[in-house]
Length: 113
Length: 117
Image (cartoon, rainbow over all chains, first blue to last red; front, side, top):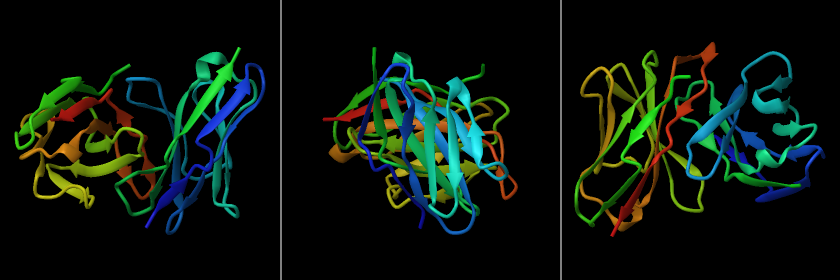
């Protein structure tokens, strides 16, 4: 069975400070990992993915994520957060032979001006 | 940029009634999905659909649920006899391709909020 854990329900940072949203996963075999962002009353928007290759993945809006196989983690990062980054962030994993994507519970990010 | 569109944005129905949630996936996508998000809970997989058949479904997707691609553009989720616990946001998603060496991201619609009273 595959699963995702996002240990923090909320992350609060000041604008201009670095932002990190944590994610760990469990899956059989090699993982396909994703980050999505959800704004109020909207669907999930794709930010970035890790399939194979470089452990540091760059995505939309200046976000990046680092895949760490030994720690089974895929933390989302942004060097300098903006107020407009305030949203709900979901980490997701898919196994090599699966169709379904399993989501974490989500982390609410609040960036204060 | 092409989008997944869902209608209606909000559906209110009485317990026991049938509902059909509609989705128009991105036109060149081949894989289609339904997910749901009960208020305050995580996003849950319901079903995936490829080549006019279900490729995977979750335990949630019981006999009360069905999916259909009635024409070349629409993808529908039907709940035959709604229950109170079916109240949730239902998201449709599509992806271009999916396989052992490729994994296109899912593109989600804005969702249909289903309220069962």
